[in-house]
Length: 472
Length: 65
Image 1 (cartoon, each protein chain N blue to C red):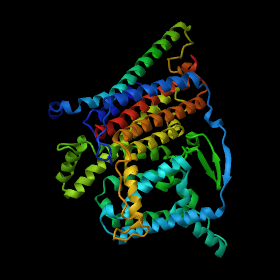
Image 2: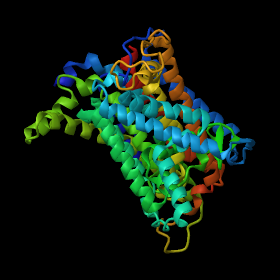
Image 3: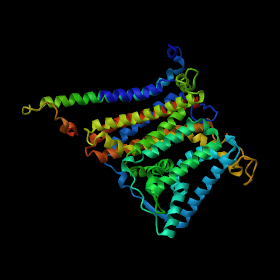
Image 4: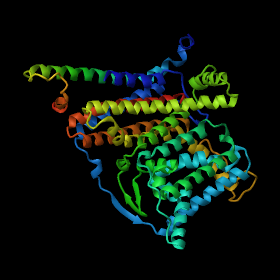
């Protein structure tokens, strides 16, 4: 217990006891807030503690799994084909723009499409409308199309190789880490042609994987984007199955997250990579004697070229921040296991409570990228009209500009704080309900969540600290 | 030490850790209280047959609902 307590205090405290970090991708405005920013962290912590007490007093048996859903409508099969074709077409245009277009990142469609519309826009769409990516996923559409054609011509394809169950979703977790590395570390991320080449390589890996292990099995476990966006879609009020749409309570879908190896790993990498994006903008990382400089000097000292040394330093930072997030989740799991009398054991709890990280991952994404989507997302208007950046005006919107006045810095800040608080309250509710289902004794269930509460408060304060410099 | 010389730049970052530390202290205090209560309950129970060296305390973990 003392070991867990020490780790629980030290991990976030070490992270927090450093100078301000700026908001990743923040737009250059400063919020004019009525109270110091650290007071928001205290207020958020009070909200979480009050929510925890309310849950403990008012919520005495598991209810989420029994909440009803309602059938809404069905879609014709042709729409599924059209969505797949749209995804393949969009992917083709992005790759074409990247390879053949202007190599200035802001003038080419590819970087904005990949880093803003896909990586940030699709999670927002998924939380609102359900798993939209599975409908438009280009590799899934091609895989299913090839399977359909092969079935018509030769009567079917050979049976796929059984997917190794022990592998679970670890390939997707690795894929997300690789994408984060490309976005935050790789020196070639500004080059549209390099991004397009990576996108093509990824598509090839996906197609090979699907041909070996089957389209659905591979998509559900190894496609980094499919898995990540599918997790966010579990928070949506719309649930899709076989083209049938059902209305359900928001967030409740998280209960249906498969408890497979690597499921928590995917979410830890999502939260950790977003955190590193914020952390790497701050003074402690970028300062004259900051961590980045020290790591770079260290790698240069062992003979790496300057550019390689910088990338090596950032790689270490990314992995360390992901490890800190993994450490926090581990603290919560070990604390729960101890409070529950080690039954179920920590490994089992790590799987069965992983779904509580979904709203946190989305809250972090909103907090860090909301302004990016709001502002840089507007660039889509002129980029789709001139995707290669060579002066075309296909849709008549090439002269559109980004309006930075649509949102004030204060509005952005309040959206960020609200996202962090609501995301963590939702996570607490999910964890409380799962605890009641795990331990028949209500008191044990509540006690098991003390540690989860502390980790939720730690995630909230960490998130606000990462945002603090941008808003000051 | 350079970090101490620049304390004015980073001390306010510690304020973000205060809620975490407070909750950790509350957890630690709660754990100690539970341990004491468990010890007191054990002391009130008549001694068991020889052979029980304290390793079998698991069943009572959930017995104080």
